[in-house]
Amino acid sequence: MSTVLATVGSSGNAATALFAGGGGSNQATYSVTLDPDADANAVRDRMVAAVDRVTDAGEITVSAVGSGFGSSTVDVIVTAPDEASLAGATKAVRSAVDDTPGTSNTSDNLAGAQPVVGVVVDRRKAVGAGTTEAAIQQQVSAQVNPATVATLTRGGNTSDVVLELRSPPAGLTGLRDLVMSTPTGTKKLSALANVDRLDVPTSVTRTDGDRSATVSTTPRGKDLGTLTTELTTRIDALALPGGAQATVGGVSADQQDSFRQLALALLAAIAIVYVLMVATFKSLIQPLILLVSVPFAATGALIGLLMLVGIVVTNAIVLIDLVNQRREAGAGIDDAVIDGARLRLRPILMTAVATIFALVPMSLGLTGGGAFVSRPLAIVVIGGLFSSTLLTLVLVPVLYRLVERLRTRRSRRRAAQRAASPEPAPDGGPDGVVEEDPSEGDRDEQGGRLRPLRGGIGPPELIRRARGMLAACSA
Image (tube, rainbow, N blue to C red; front, side, top):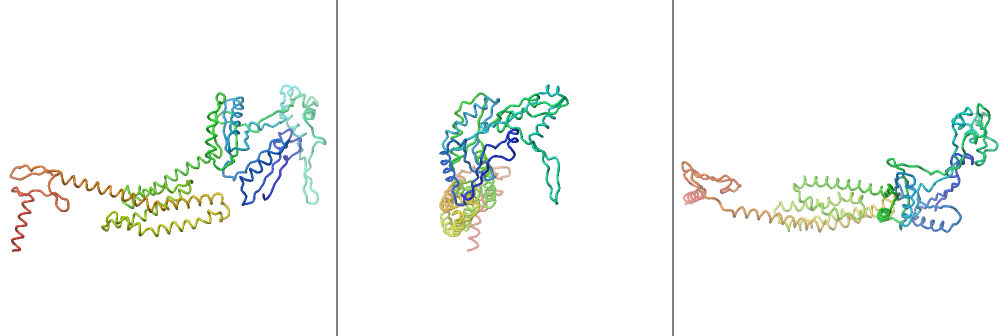
């Protein structure tokens, strides 16, 4: 521990705390600042074990202060149509949360009722005395709270002149005996109002018009997902009073919302990368082969996966682009894949190794502040980059070879079917012209259609006569 700050009670005098509700006059708070290298969870567990041995000290809770970016507790929101149902449902939910492993410092805002003094003016008595509620309130406040009546300046220093009773009222009896001035004479406060002690909740909240309460607990470990699942299962099994409902919120809801936003960002990144690769490779299938390596980069953090999308896909693009160049130069599928993988092995490994070594200081916590975020992120990126690089060098070439072989076989099969299809016999038309179906017939070297000439001379006869003429000229 670095520093310890103790706060006992609340500001203001005892009379003010008694009348206004206080809100802390019977409480003490210790704020502990830990060393940068201290394990907060371990220190908290040791403090919980230590305060559990303290007796006759009231209720003691140990909790971690949030970082300001959201809640640090798992909250269960309980709603009910009336106060009685809310109290019963809150009690049942709190009992279930207490029995859940991994929870500590369970509390609810209904259990924090505090005593206050309520002064309710009897309007009939006030009217009979010729006064009003506002006048009685001002007189009570003036006698309980010190009032600044003037300002005194002496020697350049300014001081307030405060007027207060020599002996403030003590307890309910003192408040009831306060003297009120009315047009009909002086009267005691008890003759004009009811002064009683009341127990009120620390807060009154409503959700969609229904009274609501919050049951909060602090997770002991780091596995928030398991704790949330266990809490949800236990709460769903409860038989709550009629109309009462309970839902899990707090840090668990914040985590789920963050994951949803990161998932949307991830899908958008993959879609943008896919569109760019389709425009680059002029193919819809090859970009899918490259994106196969992206899921293997996921090792537990969506932020790390979002960063790895560009790195992993870049390595695959560099590899497949060279393979396509080799194929355009006339190489076969196997030769192009082997040659491309051999030539791109060194730059891909150099890129991955350089990135991994650049993240090593961050993964060891040597970068100073923000290590609670940067260290896990660096570890995730290193692990994902290592696995995805190996899979890029192995899985992507294998998938490319399988897909391209399948496409080649399909193209050859279609070509063979076209070559083996029989051609219909030509029919004689008017004037001895042989008509032919435009969709059938022989093709020239550029894939165009050859039509018969007048007189019934078809392409085979024309070719035979041309060869004879060439042979006669050469002779």
